[in-house]
Amino acid sequence: GSPHSLRYFDTAVSNPSPRLPPFLSTGYVDDRQLDLYSSEWRKVLPWAPWMEQNMDAEYWDRSTQIAQGNQAVFRVDLGTLRQRYNQSDAGSHTLQYVYGCEMRPDGSTLGFYQYGYDGRDFLSYDANIGIWVAPVPQAQITQRKWNTDMAQLHNDRHYLEGECIAWLRKYLSYGAESLRPREPQLLVSDRPTPDGLTRLSCRAHGFYPRDIAVVWLKNGVAMCGETQSWGIVPSGDGTYQTRATIEIDPSSDARYQCCVEHKSLTQDLRVAWEPKANVWLTVGVVLGALMLLMAVAGIGLYIDK
Image 1 (cartoon, helix red, strand yellow):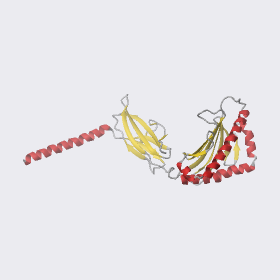
Image 2 (cartoon, rainbow, N blue to C red):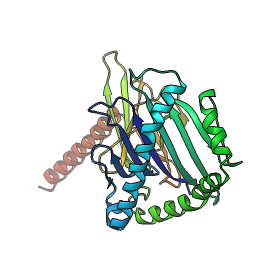
Image 3 (spheres, rainbow, N blue to C red):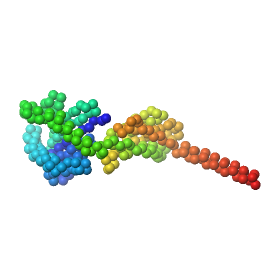
Image 4 (tube, rainbow, N blue to C red):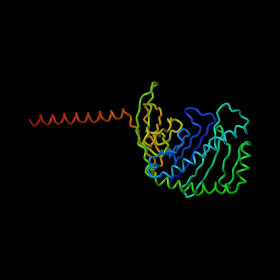
C-alpha cells in the first residue's frame, strides 16, 4: 500500500490582484482536489464530482462558515505580521497555512499545521511533542501564547489524530474509484536528429497516481545520466503523462528498452525499441522467401503442364 493524505491550503494576500483574490482555501486528498473557497464568491464549492454526490448541504454550509472565519482571522493576522516585521502598507504580503494528516501503510498517522509568511516558514506544530515551534523571532509571541493555552493544544492534537483521520477515511471511501491506481500505457518511437543520431522517445500516459519512474535501459543497464525526462503533466482526465528520451548512435547493435516503475505495477514494465532497419530487413527476408516460393510454384505448375 501507499500513504494517503488529507491537506488543506489557505492563502491570504494583503494587496490582491485580479488573478489572486484576498483569500483562497482548498482541500486535497492525495493529489485530488476536493473543494475550493474564494473570497470572491464566499462559498465553499465542491470540486471533485464524488464530493458533490456524497456531501449534503449542511456539510457545505459548515465548510463555508469555517472558511469565512479563517478569511477574517487571516486579514487581521496580515496586519499584525506587517507590524512585527516593521513593513509598510505598500507592497503585497502573503500568509499561507497548510494543515492536515497522513495515514501510512503500517497504520501509523502523522499530522501537521504549518504557517508561512512571504514564502518562508513562520510557525509550525511538532506533532511528536504536541507544541508549536517558532523558526523566526517574529513568531515567538504567538508561539508562547499558543503553547500556554492547554485547551487549544488539546484541540489541536485531537483534530490531527482523530477528526482529520476520520475525514480522510471517509473521503477515501467516497473517491475510491477516482483514487484507484491506473497502469501506464507505453509508446516507444524514434526519429533522426540533425547531427546524425537517433532520438528514442518513450511516452507513458494514462497512469495514476502521479509518481512514476521512466528510464531507458541499454543492454539491461539503466541509462540514468543519459535519459532526459520531460516532466509529469496532467492529461485532463484525472490521469498523468510523461516522456523520456535518449540519443543513440544508429549504427549501435545494443538492445534498448524503456523501463517504467509505478504503483499500479507489480513489477517494472519494459518495452523494447525495434530499429526500423531490422524491421525492413525482416520484411525483405519475408518478401524474398515469398518470391522464391512463387517461383518454385511457377516451376511446379510449368512442369505439371
